[in-house]
Image (tube, rainbow, N blue to C red; front, side):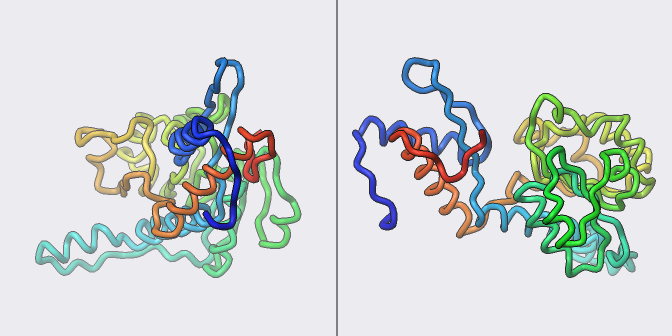
Length: 262
């Protein structure tokens, strides 16, 4: 941390480290001192955003080309001729065009996909520059071959992907969630997958983590599940921790944090 020097009392430094640890994976509301002061810090650091976006791309390719199933079959002594799902000309729908959604869009520009997005506060300039068509939620949902979630969990997004939204999706579409498990009604998703309405899902987040070996979604072969590892890479983890600590120290010293939520 040689590029950042700040003298603070040991108690303040210890509290800042505690807050940094508590907020390194999510947005948290932390009560300080008298219990009345709320501090919110978010893991909004570019290395983490880059790695989460790359994690999304990896899951998308695994779904499109059935890579996990092909690997498992080959290891079992089989030599299957699995049919993949071409990405060229397909529509990728992004629910959320914030920092991570934008990084995903940048990377998908090279895949010859059509990009559509819905965001409550859209960045029209970014969308125009990167060929992203901004649409209402219902249109993104109904047009996407791959529907990707890049939203925080808020009162109006909790359980957003419910039975009503899933039935609006294209038959044979894929759902990818590298954000928060609470965005999805998991029972409704199970039904959509089991019925064949959706072709597959890749989930890097669950409502309860870990989900447990008996979780219904883990029984479906068309589901790829990973342990909330989207941002976990050698460079990103270190940058997230130091970034959160710097912002905690800034706030506790009366300064503005670099990565603020509100």
